[in-house]
Image (cartoon, rainbow, N blue to C red; front, side, top):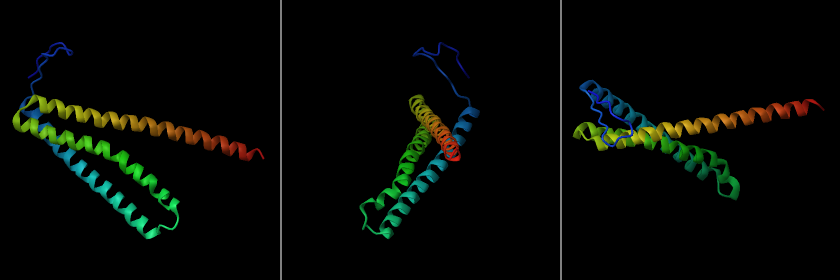
Length: 145
């Protein structure tokens, strides 16, 4: 089941039993489903931007700037969805071929997914705290007059 060796050793070996492989296979399927749904939503966001931009008219060169936040959101959203899709793809290959190298790549993409989401949460939390502090400061400033 599991050989306990030094974590940093190149010879560390981890064997998965049938239950672990079954759980990995189920996780892979859900990851594939979520990534496909994510790609569809990204496509819908981009399609919405293209349609809205074409309907708004191109008279004003700055009219495209109103759609910039949606394009930024879809770009940022693409990376964790891509990592999830790659995890699913490499997990499928690993289970199908009993290949530890593919399994290692799958785990790398899963780590990238969670790392990206963690960093994104830290950035958004900092942004919201800064925004809240700015709002409190500006409202106190405005109320003093």
